[in-house]
Image (cartoon, rainbow, N blue to C red; front, top):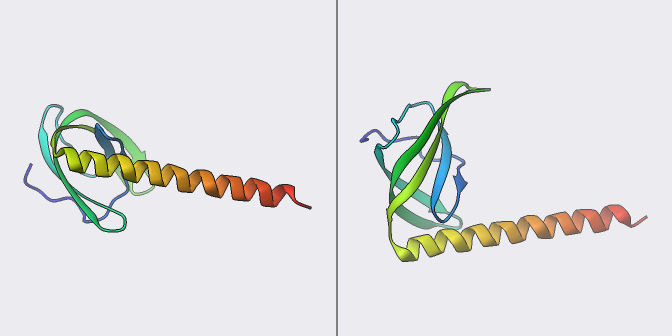
Length: 106
């Protein structure tokens, strides 16, 4: 597909693929050029194959939930994604621990 999606969008990300909501329908087995920017500013490019497209109703109206498997991605980019996920999970866990310890102190 040659149509660009909006610049910034939240995605569900893993080392093997990603999921995202889109106003546009992408047929199963189609290939997408994916350009991601991880925090702080790590550009990633991959080619993904659409595994699943499901219509969903959102607060912004009808959309499609798209599941994509990375079929072509540089090993360094895959590692950057995995490091990003691990950092994000560690940050979430730290916040949970801080919130639970501060709420238990009277």
